[in-house]
Amino acid sequence: MGGASLLRLAAAAVLAASMMMAASATHVPPPLPVLPIPNAAQLAWQRREVIMFFHFGMNTFTDSELGTGTEHPSIFAPSALNATQWMDAAVAAGASLAILVAKHHDGFCLWPSAYTAHSVRASPWHGGASDLVREFTDAARARGIDAGLYLSPWDRHDERYGREVEYNEYYLGQLQELLTRYGRVSEIWFDGAQGKNVTKMTYHFQEWFQTVRQLQGAINIFSDAGPDVRWVGDEQGFAGTTCWSTVNRSSITIGDAGIEEYLNTGDPRGTDWVPPECDVSIRPGWFWHRNETAKPLSQLLKIYYNSVGRNCVLLLNAPPNTTGLVEDADIARLREFRAAVTRIFGTDLAKGSEARASSERGAGFGARKVLDGSDDTYWAPTAEDGRRNGYWIELRRPAAARPFNVVRIQEHVALGQRVERHEVFVDGVAVASGTTVGHKRLHRLARPVAGRTVKVWFAARRGVPLVSAVGLHLDPYVTDVM
Image 1 (cartoon, one colour):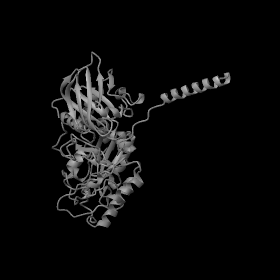
Image 2 (tube, one colour; image 1 turned 45 degrees about the vertical axis):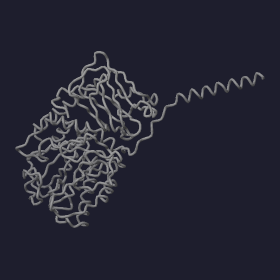
Image 3 (cartoon, helix red, strand yellow; image 1 turned 90 degrees about the vertical axis):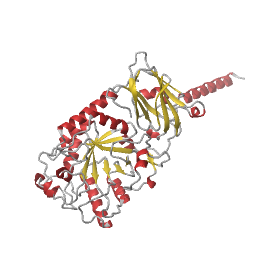
Image 4 (cartoon, helix red, strand yellow; image 1 turned 90 degrees about the horizontal axis):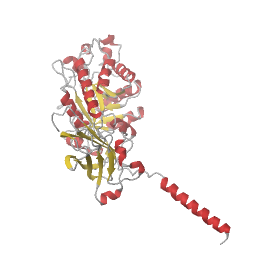
C-alpha cells in the first residue's frame, strides 16, 4: 500500500473518531410527553399557586350571600372605596392575579353596561359616573398584578333571563364589554351555580367560550368543565388526596349536581388538561358581614397544604366592607399567612445534599436537577428502570443537616402528569405515602426528623416519572397532620 493510501486511511480514521466524539457530545433529547399536556397559559397559571378573589356588590349592603335581584341601585353607596387598597390585600397574600366579581347572581353590574340600567350608573356612588371594573383593573396593573373577571350566568334581575336567545345575546354583549374595554384579562369565571326552583335557562357556553378566545387569546377560562381551569368541587379550599389535572370534559355538564367528586379528584384517563382551582373565602361568607372575622392562620395553612400542596391553585377571597375597603384585620391575616408560607418554604433544607437516582436519561436530566430550584429542569430516568427495580430518587444530606417535617415533590407537568403512587422513606423508614403529585405535592410529617437519606419511590406511574424538585422544609406551625 502506497504512502498516499496510508494517509487517506489515517485521515478517514481521524474523521470517524471525530464524528463519534461529536455524536457522544450531542444532547440527549427530552422524553416524549404523556398526553394531555398544559398549554402555555395553563402552565403559567399553575405556577401562580395563590391568587385573589374580591366579592363586592349588592350583597355587601344587604348583609346577604344571595341577592334577590330586586335590590335598588341606591343602596350601592361605598363611602371610601379604594381599589388600590384591595391590591394591598392581594400583595399581602403574595398573589399575582386578582379576580373581581363584576356581576353576581343579583344581576347588578359594577361597570356601566350599555345593556342594562341595573348598574353603578344608577347608583349614588360618585354620582353614577364611576366604573369599578375600570378602577379595579387599573389598580391591579399599577401594582404589577394581573386582572381577572367573574360574570355570573345566573341573573335574578334581568327580565330576559329564561328567554334563551335573548338572554344569551345579552350575556354575550356583556362579555364583549368586559373583554374589550379593560385591557388584558388573564382569567374569566363562569360560575355554574343556579338556585333550586328557578327559571330554567339554557346557556350557550360554547358560543361564549369561542367569543372569549376571539377577544382574549391568552386568557384562561374557568367553569366546572374548563376548558382551561375547573372548579375543584367544593368551597372549602380542599382538593382530593388524589388530584389529577386531567378530566374528560365531555362527561361534565356545567352546573349539574353530582359531579363534585369527579371534579375533586380528576381522571387519570382524562383526555383534557383542565387543572383545578380551589376557591375559598378568608371569612365564613363570600361577602362581608359585620359579625364575621377572618379564619385563623392554622386554618389558612391547612387550606394551603390541601390546595397548593395537592396540585391546585388557591383562589382566596377577601371581601371589602360597606365602605369599600378590605378590613385592616383581614389584610393583617393575609400578611401573616404569606409570612408563614415564606418562613416554611423560603428555606430548603435539602440544600447541600447529594442526589442520586435509579438511573439518569442523560447529562441534561441528572438527579441533581431536583435541587437546582428551577421548574423548567427535571430528573428523567431511563425506561429500563420500569423493567428492573423501579424508579426512585434519593437525597444524601450533610451530617449536620437540620430536622424537617415537610417533604415537597414536584413533577415536570409540562410533559404531562405521570405519578400515580409514591412513597417517602427517611433512613429506610416510611414516613409518607400518596397517590398523585402533579405541579406540587406537600407531605406534612407527624414530627420533625433529621435523617441522612431521603428517598422517594415512584411505585406506580404513567410512563417514566419526570421530577423537577424534591425539597425539605421545617414547618413550626404544625398542630395537626392531614
